[in-house]
Length: 296
Image (cartoon, rainbow, N blue to C red; front, side):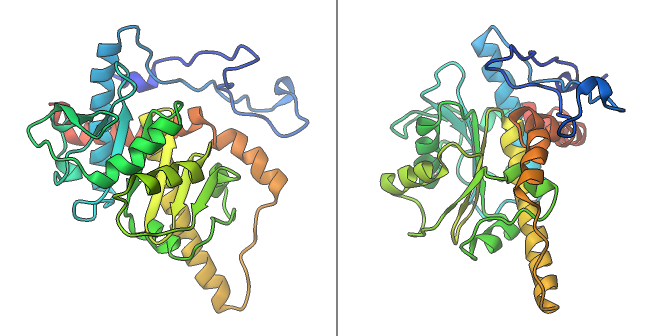
């Protein structure tokens, strides 16, 4: 049986506010003339019961941690992914401090209010202060953000030591064309409210931030999108580190994608629905590998 994420249709555009769920054709090529028609993307599950939505999304968040664990994004106790609570949007769910990503279950997650107080959750009620300072500020500044992800992944933190934004040198990097920022400051572990607010301010309305000397931060309107943007950005950092080294060793520079082509490609692979759909295989695989353990 296909997983629910593969069968739930996305709402159609009303021509004014909702994004289109179909990928664009080449510039100047009307859809009826396209040789191969792009399919309509499915979309996230919809709920009328906010408590049912909460339960479903907590399961997705637990799966997200299993994915991060599988990709080796854990570094001791560092790293966190947060989910805005659909019942009380002023609060969010996060992993308990010190529990391995690869072991997290839905029942382990803890709910945190706007003051950093744990108000619900599993047996391990320890909160990573940096998680609250960064994610609390991002969720407060960005009502559109349902999920935020941050970890000390190896290629992300390596690239963040360069103090520069990503070059658009691959098709995948086009997802971040004019949609990521560099936070060019490092003041140690983020334990101050001020720095959390500065990170949120630097992020602005973008989907990703490169935190200098620290690591990657991605956000999304869905858990799936935030997770996919993180994994994709990590791979883009890896690709650029290798490409820059190879080009530099030959006395050359990498070939950059032009703004027009990057912007066109972004429309296909950089939208919120594209981020959600691109993550579907990751979640399908982790659900098959873990069974229902993460849902306990």
